[in-house]
Image 1 (tube, rainbow, N blue to C red):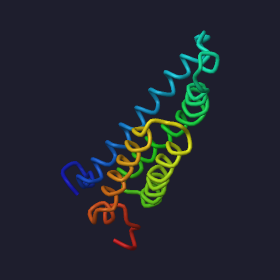
Image 2: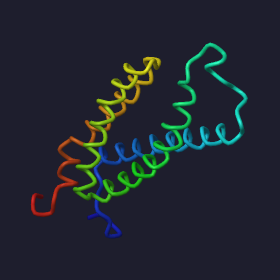
Image 3: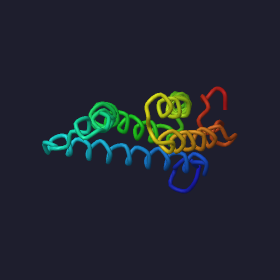
Length: 146
């Protein structure tokens, strides 16, 4: 315990939670941007202009239906990990492992540019690594395990 009765939060947990919040903010910004574009009545038809329907897919499914609730869940998990709750730590490990595996796979299956698969995978590996440090594991351990 430190002054004021607050529990000491290890630096690796603080950095990981900052990553949670940053990724959540980016996802929420993308979701709101996509929602604004969809509601503005786009006059762009990618298929008629020789492109693919990838933009429509990304804007509607990923951004509006998927990113908004996922961003909220990610920020919620970050708050709970910072409090040292074991279930949130485990859920975060599962989440980042899923992102690290699925982002490159989706970028490969869909004709997406390479950074769409590489950047999320690198972020996932970094946050997963921070959560697996001995300090973070001890901080988020069950009370009977500590």
